[in-house]
Length: 303
Ligand code: SER
Image 1 (cartoon, rainbow, N blue to C red):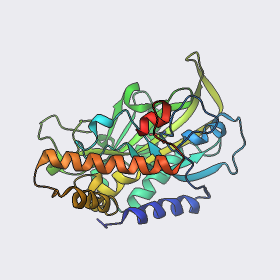
Image 2 (spheres, rainbow, N blue to C red):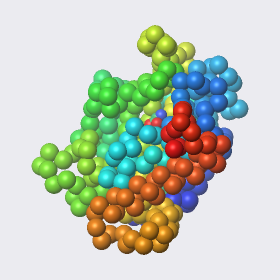
Image 3 (cartoon, rainbow, N blue to C red):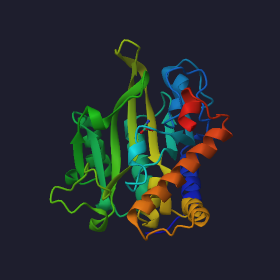
């Protein structure tokens, strides 16, 4: 596999979707604007919610971004798994009432198999349990082997975050090989270990969830996809975890230098080095976007 750098991967993705007539927008601030339901931007689609619901008109019906994100629910896993970080960049392509499942699925496959040349037999697909339409598109249109598709329930394959646009989703996984696995005979897609890494989520946004928990059908279904840039770099560079990819490892090396510790000598120290590296990334980007340490809200997250 070609060892693309993280910055190269970001550019490859954004220009691929520009070639599919998407407008490239810069990342939005981590601080949500006019959205009381979120403390911090946690997905590429979050700043685009008014376009999904139709409240505002997007500059174009196809948009692509690389969005800075903060996700805190996984904080206890940071440094211990290969794939979790409180800060990450999310690559996304979005359709506001324009294309839907067919194009989103086909282009995702084209990007990973033609642009990145990921080996097809190591890619796995998950779909929402009763989404037969997605199954047919993956198998009949795209040509994925049916035995490389798994069906998951609402917890895994239905995307919703607070109120707003949501829907069933389909995820792409990459088998990093036995060396990254837990060794259990049951290890397969969906296992908590780091062998089968979920790296891209295609959300078929067809509902708008209101404050009373009702799922209202959107007049024009949308597409929201999110690919973890750091996870993709881990796959392409075949490194152990997100802190070892080409750009992020520079931060960890500086942490080692300042602390006088050496990476890969002691697992407990390694976890700490990765946690500090992660928190530096989050802290820098939060402060850049105007957040100050305090005792409440965003400031408390930063503190
Ligand atoms: N909103 C979805 C996610 O964050 C896809 O972008 O996974």
